[in-house]
Length: 355
Image (cartoon, rainbow, N blue to C red):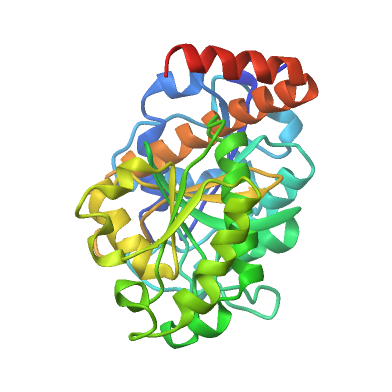
């Protein structure tokens, strides 16, 4: 049986204290109705958050605790993962603040691994000031891939628009070298499973964008699409995965083609994220698919330029929280269905009636 809504524990890593992360999470929980959907716990320090709350004239009530067994449903819990004070300077890049961002994140991931929290929502970090001898990762996703079971995949989500990436945080001049049939196969199977398990789509349709302009124009503008991408997609389609492409990326979104698919896979970071962020209007969510733990994040960065001004829009953070909760409940239902194959057939027959 799944937990009652208020008993689903959502862990929140604090992000960069000098950025807008603390602001958007505090704004989210100014609405007391949010506490009816889950029991939140921020991994940080209640004194530091109280300072930020006062500086920004926010009203969310904070409840400090020193251990997760002290969680109180109906409260915005703050787990004190450090005791000392921290100098907050809004909008400033600070290595010390970066260390606290990672301390919050790694403590939250440990709690997710140990099933002490059900969902993790991460506030934005600065990829430069988090680097140290103890943390040598370009961001959240790579660390999660190391710590949790499965294969991590960056999956950008906004309602029915879902964009995954074959390669993410690598230089453009290295994209071609990373693209192999094995990688394409792994990423597509990860998305296919996520669509079924996390989004309740029984027969997903997946579109893949070409690597080169016009998908290579039959080899005139690069051979990767013909030599690597097409054979990989053909094999998967023959195995029953509903995958299509490669499609020319320049017109795919503008023509509305994306609306015909449950997910789109881009070859590299900007090919997928520029159209996604253009269409999602600040309500997008970064979901790490493919892992046994659930992690979501808003689709924006630290926002140093507006930090401390009270101007940050919290919609993306709120959507990240909602999506994490939806996936938690969808996974619980999927586990029940897969334990009873008869239920799956009943669901499929029911969906046919309304299709």
